[in-house]
Length: 260
Image (cartoon, rainbow, N blue to C red; front, side, top):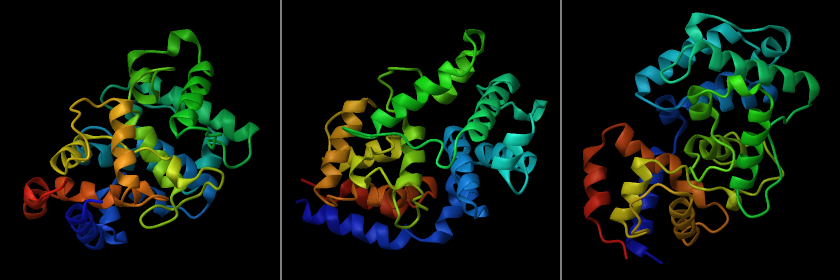
């Protein structure tokens, strides 16, 4: 299937699927830690706050992880983290404080991994379960627009791009992902659908859909399974680099090469 598409994707994968390019991604924070408990918490926070300008994301996460110190999981277990520097875009200081407090409580009561959940159809099963659990862990008055934007809404039709990104990091064991989870298969993952992937999928005739819905994300993931059946998200990191790093030459080739 899609011989030309596969060749181009393989070329981009060979170019960008390298640890050096992790520095352009929030995933870089996960590799600052060795302890799996720390990596899981850092991955979740890095993924959920990964919206907006890259410079703004990195600036906030730099401040946040400085506050959490060399052992973020232990810090959250032992300390109530507060402060005005926890404000980020749509999240008030209180929104972020609530999330950190819930994670601290879970770390006290549960052993690693604290965020791995069963999957039957696809990763949206685990995502919806976690959104429900996190939301149920705070009082109704705390379920503000900022909280809902950060964590998601139970039962929402949203593509949950940042959750899908988190699970890609946690499930895949090939570069650039650390792959800490063992019970979820990589072929249950769904593409973290953003403007970069949607454009590429449309350019390469992997979808004709224009809307960012779960059905669009599932359709695109199914198309990638024809290229890499057991690991459909193999190309995700590399394919998003040309847009993030402004590689105009590769973007032009992606737009104008023949797919179907």
